[in-house]
Length: 209
Image (cartoon, rainbow, N blue to C red; front, side, top):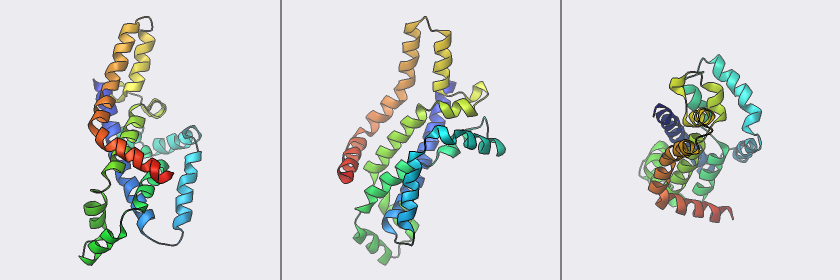
């Protein structure tokens, strides 16, 4: 249960941070005209071609130098942003009605007010889709916790399953039970957000086509 709780805390906080930062960045790239906007977007997209294995050692050295090893901050902060999330939110918000934003500005709403009061409430499908994908990615993440975690108190569920499988490799029933228990939170999350996730995924696919 401790490992499940650790994974839930890390996945939840990473998801909240990623959804907030990616949606805010996507909003800026979609609805504000400034010099270098296209270059910034292309640079962000270019990072998608870099595998995590190529940067995990430098990232590990940075986390170690900041004394965040074996902490929740070390598990969460380095993974708060991802290029796919920025691209997804930018693509979704490109078609957002500019008239609504202009009307809010005429009414005296601040730029952050526009983001929190207009953009977020009307972007639920995209936010839910990004949230489910991010949560699943962090819930199943093995490589980064394997590098950062040292104490059993910070052990994540993927690490626990590997250790459990090594101890119980002859007991298939126990191994399957552990896998099912570890999958329950993902099933609950997906079933809860299905009404937002499916339309969001379909909408994003249609816009990309």
